[in-house]
Length: 72
Image (cartoon, rainbow, N blue to C red):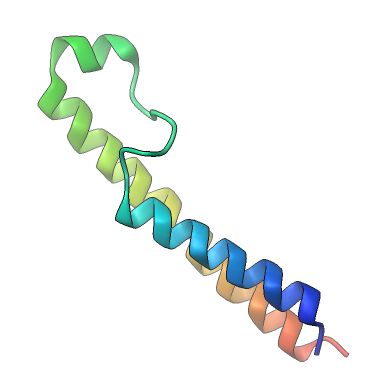
């Protein structure tokens, strides 16, 4: 069991949950022109990208926690 790896995995899970919970606090995945031209569409795309990135980071965090648990 490696506590540093488990801690890193927990941090990644936290970042992913933050990304899912607050999609507009992340960097903008949508261009500035799209925000000006069609704000509703831009917000939908921003949420979609933030959710995708968040879920990916959460899954990666669980993998890292798993590796930390089985590491000897």
